[in-house]
Image (cartoon, rainbow, N blue to C red):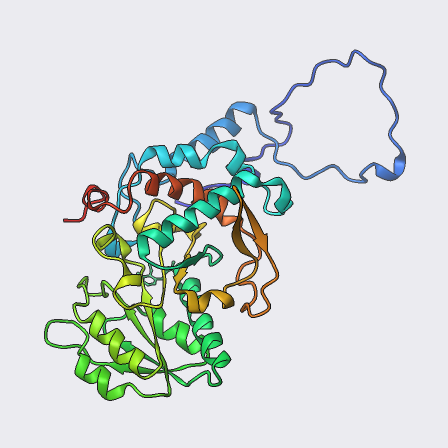
Amino acid sequence: MPEKTLFEKSRPGRLGASNPTPDVPSADLPTDVLRADAAELPEMSEVDVIRHYTHLSRMNFGIDLGMYPLGSCTMKFNPRINETVARLPGFARLHPQSPRDLMPGARRLMGELAEYLAEITGFDAVTLQPAAGAQGEMTGLMLIRAYHTANGNPRKKVLIPETAHGTNPASSTLCDYTVETVRGNAHGLLDPHDLEAKMDEDVAALMITNPNTLGLFEREIARAAEIVHAKGGLVYMDGANLNAIMGYAKPGQFGADVMHINLHKTFTTPHGGGGPGAGPVAAKKILEPFFPRPVLVKRGEDYAFDDDRPRSIGKVHGFFRQLRHVCPRLHVYPRDGAGRPETRQRAGGS
Ligand SMILES: Cc1ncc(COP(=O)(O)O)c(C=O)c1O
């Protein structure tokens, strides 16, 4: 049954507040600031307002009721401490337009987080700007296009295995690439012979979900990367399912050039109900000059935003606002040893 709003529950004449009798003389306000009509606010008793909001809060999905339902390929348990940390007022109340100079703690949190993610994934650099997995894909492909363009030819195609996530071809099309499908073999894995047959100098990248959408680790990933690199292409790894391999393998070391991470799957960030999400992109050094601006860089003990990035693909997100919620949760995880196999096992992996 749909919930009634406070406005629908309103009853004329009900009051939720009783103001004390003033102990100072009342003053007349200038007439030009007085409103002509009464504000149309709901009229409710205090107890009804409390009951309304308490009822709504109990309809929320929380870890005491079950797993967070999104990130279906790699379910994980969200430790309560991460929720507590995300509610620390310094993060939770950070205004999206806070002047960058006034948020050294948030800058440090983001800077350290980017370093942790680079370490966990085996890449040289990480941008935290994309707000979701699919936006991370688009960002990664924009980096690939910028890289090839800088080398004289943006190329035309992206090769995508049958077992890719559905957003992969969508992101490629959005970045103006034609998609060509690479066949899978009888075991549900990429067929390197088909890849070899389709790889040519018009191919900008192989975009491969690994572990793939069948839940299988692509065993021939290193060979696939060799085939692609031999013709000057790059390997985009959809790393949404990092949870399955975190602590065991680093994509930056088995041939991928760029990947995004779906933080809601591997770490404890929200995703259902519209976020706030985050889809950081990790990449090799060759792609770093094209990273979205501003880039967070380490200056001494501090981190600073660097806007002076003439080769940048530009901004992909206006604010770092989603990071108020995401970074603190996530920061707890790597500190707790995200690079170790136990973390994956504790999260429900085998
Ligand atoms: C493998 C894979 N890639 C990409 C995405 C897209 O991520 P998002 O929903 O955060 O845009 C998902 C969705 O969870 C996914 O499972």
